[in-house]
Image 1 (cartoon, rainbow, N blue to C red):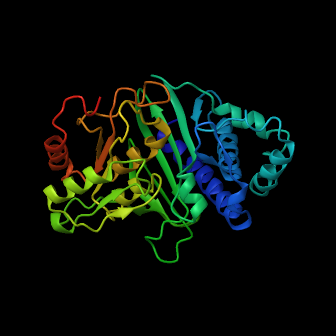
Image 2 (image 1 turned 30 degrees about the vertical axis):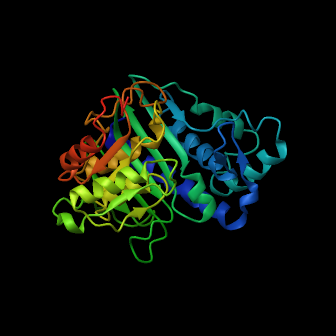
Length: 327
């Protein structure tokens, strides 16, 4: 199937998962979160979102692998938890139930690589989800190491008045667009490429453990852009740049040797580039999604409206002259 043919079912999958996540958020408390081995929180919503989307993907592209963040290994000895997750998924898709849930979750165990596959983060920004902040349902199709279709669900994005969440999309041959409901007509996305530099805003992670805020401050000063920083969780930051609500997003490693996960960036990259922006690593290299679950060949991420890209890279170089900084 062509990307243009996959867009509609991908949108439907992300809308469905987004609605389910919000239903869970309204009915369950933070105490329902578990803790994975890497200490990041995972909730019933992560599992429900992934199962619903994988169910739809297996129906439309049964031969394509899926690289997804979650798996069923933490649930096999927890029948009561499985039943709670299924109590939500069945509202949206009766086929995603106690009998099918675990197998569906394990359909996301593809290793990625140089072929064609989907990658999914069922809830990007779980901490934001738990605290009532921003999070994203991020789905992308990757072909030959590059995202060629991205759908980014942001259920709490407040850019458009009265919108019950926003879903962003874009890719190769697919324009950058956003949708305010399942039945609404799409509207065009355009990054703020013509904005005055002094009015441009930086977007960065809420969590200081995710990016070097001190280095961001130096870049802001050198570029002469606004000190009014837009801090939010998840790939909603990509949406902010694609929509023109911010002009620059920096993901600056705080730990040497850290490698980004592909599901944390694939959908956002496709959306921003379709909106006229640009995404590279901190050395100006194109992101390479053909190396398995991580961006093994890249260091950090910079996403921009396009016009600020080279100045931002130059500012980073001034403050990180050591060649080893981004290794």
